[in-house]
Amino acid sequence: MKDIILNLLELKNVQHIKIAGNEIRCCCPFHDEENPSFSINLETGKYICFSGKCGKKGNLISFISEMTGKSYKDVENDLQINLENIKYNSIIKDTLDSFNEKKEDLNYIKYNNYKFIDIKNLQDENKILNLINIPKNISDIVGLKICLTNPYKRRLVVPIDNNVFEFRDITKKSDKKCLYELGIKIGNYLFSIIINDKDHSIFLTEGTKDAMSVAGFGFNACCTFGINISKKQILKIMQLGINKVYILRDNDEAGFISSKNTYKEIKKFINCKIIKYPKDFKYKDPNEITNKQEFLDLLQFNNLIEVYNYEK
Image 1 (cartoon, rainbow, N blue to C red):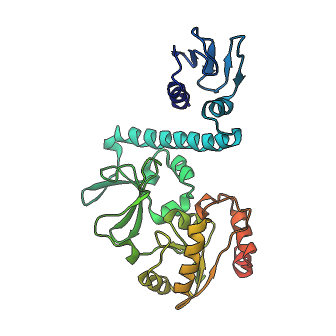
Image 2: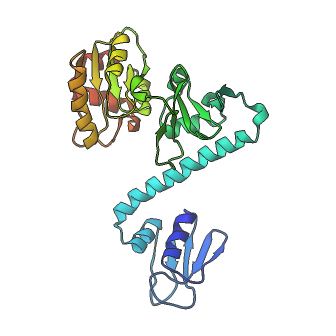
């Protein structure tokens, strides 16, 4: 929050900025003055101008709204995301830094020139899993890890196949969300989690986090690492003994197009169905669904009575 406030004040070229404890005193950014009369709290974001010419006051959202010209609602949405990212990065950094200081206590897993550590060996395992919205039992099944060495340092390590890994950004700082080792043709692989081997259906998602979330709700799940599907991936689905695929792509335009294209490819070999989202569905992808009942409601919306009854 401190960085947000200071950046806005500096962008507006506000003069005489002084920080004392949790308070910033400076010239008011909302009217011309030479003597500082403006105060804003760095913890709460509440501000007030003590000048009789102005007298503006409010909270952090109204402050950003006034400074940027954005609507109150837009700022509220932006701020929520921003603060979540700050909290997210702080937990990741503190967790990994604390373990780097205790190298003698780490049970490293060596792979080529990399060092991995199982998430279950991290003191803040639950905090990290909550942030990426992955249930602990699924993390244990998959064997999620954190990479401690460059070039994938601090990335989530998702085992895909024998010595094939996805290195996923969990700091939300990288433009490249998922990386794979040089030479790996990810379209040749399928990430899958079989929760019930007596159930011959599976949900097909775009990403590994989506698949892990669906598996957390108690259903077989797999992903294709993006919006496309290859014949090799279809073959791997068939090799799992699957006879029905529920296509569950992201809730956006790219996901809608991908669903249709994926359906055309899969239907040549396996019975399949596209999972559609209600118009007012508030989540953009399966990984954002935190309530199991909401996922079951989505199935019911798609008339998946047999799947819904099985889970109930």
